[in-house]
Image 1: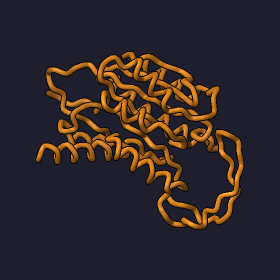
Image 2 (image 1 turned 30 degrees about the vertical axis):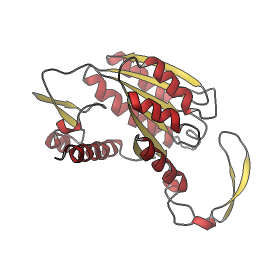
Image 3 (image 1 turned 120 degrees about the vertical axis):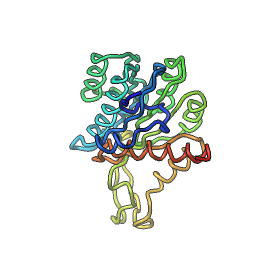
Image 4 (image 1 turned 135 degrees about the vertical axis):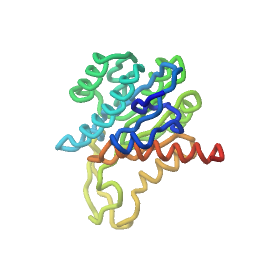
Length: 250
């Protein structure tokens, strides 16, 4: 056996922590017999996801997805991409190789969406039709939408589904700004919101998402804009390992 970069869906009990610590890239032990794996990136390009002026949100999403793509393809696995808003914008069918990685990375950085809203359910429906065998799906969104829980949980029964909640730093806690006029990036509607009642408290949106994923048995990654994506993924993998160790009594 030797080691290779971790690919979503690997048994985290095979993680080689010495190599992971030395390289700062998650690695697992490679055994003689391994099956080809499929995984998909479902990426939300709605107006709220791309609303920041300096492009930091999109940069963080691209870096996160690039890390997963390159890790999977280095193991000769197949990777697919589904871009969505309130409709499926673009589909890159799963494939192997350097050309596939370049196509995915180029699309992530340059594609201009036609829609503005968010429909996670339509992306999951497209994924369900494409994934003919058990696959891994990372659903990357800011989750400023509703009515996706049932679809996400249903996909999780057959596949390994991980929700990636994209968060801006100011969204971690309710800001101390009192009455403030805000505009919905997707609908364009403006209204006055009283932020003073929850100053310093955890953002209820993030708490709601965590509860929904916990209830539905879907793993969750909180990805803050500007985060070190390697560290975020390493933390997630370690958490999975602890969970599996607890389930096995190890």
